[in-house]
Length: 180
View 1 (cartoon, rainbow, N blue to C red):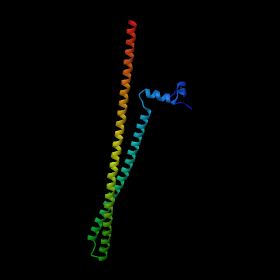
View 2 (cartoon, rainbow, N blue to C red):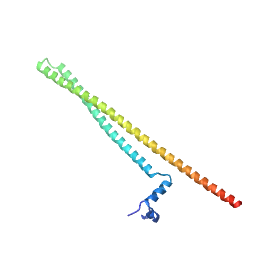
View 3 (cartoon, one colour):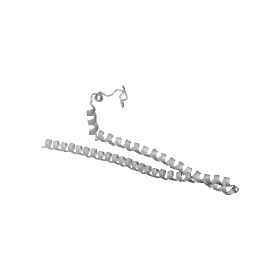
View 4 (cartoon, helix red, strand yellow):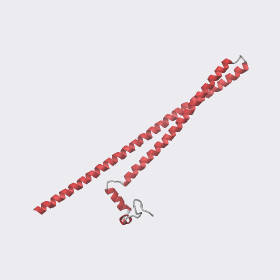
């Protein structure tokens, strides 16, 4: 089995012999917290998934809303055409009766579509709120991750400065002892 990251495909002896705990300790000494990074990354991925799901649901809702609006427009056009046909036709009583029945059916259909449209509009607004919330949560996580990285970098810098100060103080102490 080839080791990842090794040009020769063979893992170094120190890598083979070191335990996962020692590798984790080396990683932590560099200022990383594996568990914190993994947890934040998992949370970020989860929030991305939530956002994608919300986007998909919002898009489905938008399509349904558009379809209902188009149905309402088509029904209104049919009603308008029927009214024009009713006015243009002769005074045949049976023809007018058929037209009035058809207009009644169209009116009922329009009312049904309006009710459906109202429900879809409400659903769309709910899904938009869910998407907005998911988007905001995603941004919060990204900001949190960025702040965590900045804090970790500051801590690393602070520890490095302390180490350098301690090293300089140690040299000064040994040079004073040598001079005395």
